[in-house]
Length: 275
Image (cartoon, rainbow, N blue to C red):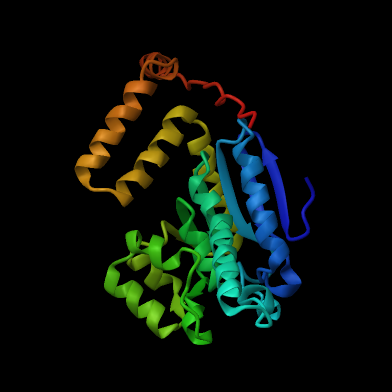
């Protein structure tokens, strides 16, 4: 499917979603939010896709929210205030869903970041599973600078990615954060010299993930997310239940036999979701 603000391509078992408003620094407008949600939902329904790369075309990964569409975010003020605020709440929840589909996708998502990653861009990459950046990358939790509380996932998901005190400083000051600092505190998995090399690293990781059992990959992702949001005992119970349903499949004996023979196993796709 063709998109106005994205490029989406699939090569083998790896999909690549690229933000594609380079002339606008990949700023996020209302069309972008609709399309990013649609793209990831479609990829999640494609059983051939086992890993997804998310990158940005042009000079920067993204400048964040397109402030020229401020009215679309803030809502109008000519109706009953209570009803307008209730409507705005529903709109914010929908915007959150546009990034939550990334976190909830069966296939792991690897962000390949370069240049500026501002505001909503941090919401976006924090919903990804793995982050690779180029050495010219810098981040800014921009919302505090424009009198907004970041509300699309940064303050929630980054809690599990960097230390609490560091997140508070970044979020409360809105300062420019160099990529070396983000890697020091664990946000970036890898920092590569250039955009092309960061993308190549993301492709290498995606290819490795795509070679594994898709049942085990999606299970590992779901269990990790559950563990982040629950205590240890709940997490142990969850993974016991998960594996009691999944271990009897074909992939475990296939992987074991391939290991004994020093061969590379080939796994079947997940079943098609017809909903």
